[in-house]
Image 1: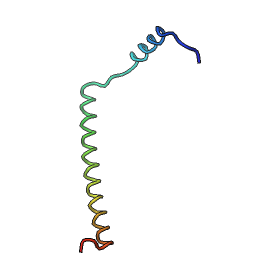
Image 2: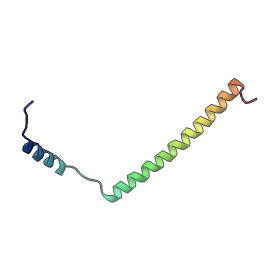
Image 3: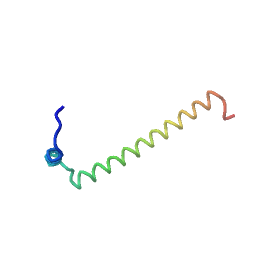
Image 4: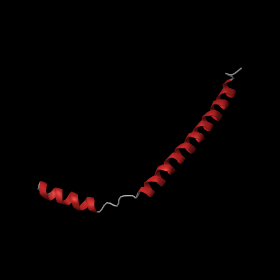
Length: 65
């Protein structure tokens, strides 16, 4: 692999950085809200799955009597 000089490296980094498409404030807000909604849905799902599995295991092992 060929070595590049520090100046050339900085120029290449600048060129690549200019290609980045940054999200708008609206896109960032929508994505953030979506993340919170999916976290809430996942937490409810795992809570219910845990409750069901705990009930089934308790019934099978007869612990709750």
